[in-house]
Image (tube, rainbow, N blue to C red; front, side, top):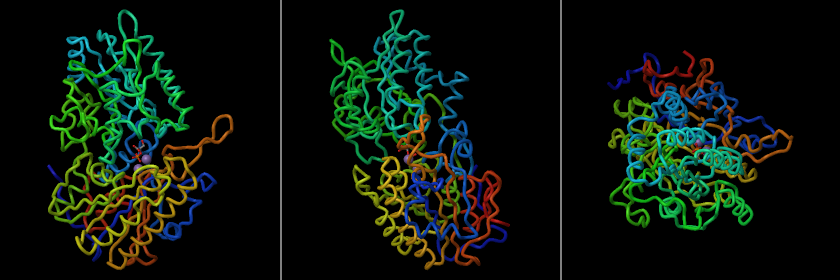
Length: 540
Ligand SMILES: O=C(O)[C@@H](CO)OP(=O)(O)O
Ligand SMILES: [Mn+2]
Ligand SMILES: [Mn+2]
């Protein structure tokens, strides 16, 4: 049953809105030359640091439901924690737990294995080949390959998406080598296990929020139809493409592995396909291509009649995919749902790259509004790549629209995501990332002022770090460009012009993290947070 929000005994909501601003990928770094946030000119952030209502929050590891504190944060777990007000065990943890207990090899796995044992077609695995633990983990793939061999599956094919975004920029080869050793070991006793296709995750298969279906089409052509440039091995593909394009893993073009008989692993009728990514945003479009009868996003060709399973269910509203190996994190009673139930109008706004972050992730991996009459979701269309050529992205347009909606739609609660620190941080381009942070700071200043004029409160935070750490120190002492998120803490500031000093006093509980923000926003809106939520950051 849904908890009802009750009025707070003492706190009164402001006359205007409460606006929660998520500066995606803007953490608190070491202030050194590799910290693009520290290097940027940020008068607004500087001002926030001087408020009594400024603190820092944990945004990685167990504080956001990851298996360990060595795991960095990411947008999914960060926005889940922000929206749900609790720490929920996340995909990374649920899947490794399900492997340890064997629960992953349940009914959906059975269907796949039985299908290929009956047809003689291969069991196909598609997913991100790294140990980033943001979308996937290579250990999960290897555990499933071993189990398949144990259960007598004769043929398996891996369609390997190259990462370089949650792991070092050119780290594909060690992962490929590790997989090849495993595949060679399993290709005995009449078994035939091989890599069949692949490509860089940002250009092949892993699009999100329908930013560019071409990306999925490239993957479909390579994985399903066996169409694309042919190589004898994945190592040869990657080495050749490095040399020819100069690109890093995330942007390498698609490739197909072929032998004397042609492509080794097109996906044909009678096969089974497991999408082994556990995170949904970049898995949903390929899932739709496999599951939807009517499909017009790209010329799919005849839909292969295959048994399809996702690592988990990626969308709880759309029930996609139908079959999945591991039950997704159960996240209900998010602050969006409670506010909708209480009749509070809400606006969620971002540009395409992060649109689902403030809707789908914020709402516990559900894409639909709870009450369309009281919620407005605004997507500002993003630019195409290369994003580092436009580090300001759509920050100004988001800000224009947000301010316009404060008067037109008059929402009581707003959540907005600025993508720049994260999306440009992922390119590894330090100069562009400094500009990205400056663009966001300028817009943040505009938002705070617009909210102040309308007698509202602004809450500023971030979902994880990224721009705050643009280099890693390698063991040999050399610097290496860092394209992945950081493990740093993130800022939290509340601007409430009613309070002396410009913001309320804070009393953050020990190890306060992103999951403490929802209660804080609910209190600022004049509600008592539910018992099940983590404590508010406000001093009593
Ligand atoms: O781009 C993505 O998919 C991830 C990194 O893998 O970034 P974020 O969690 O910020 O969306
Ligand atoms: Mn993010
Ligand atoms: Mn990111």
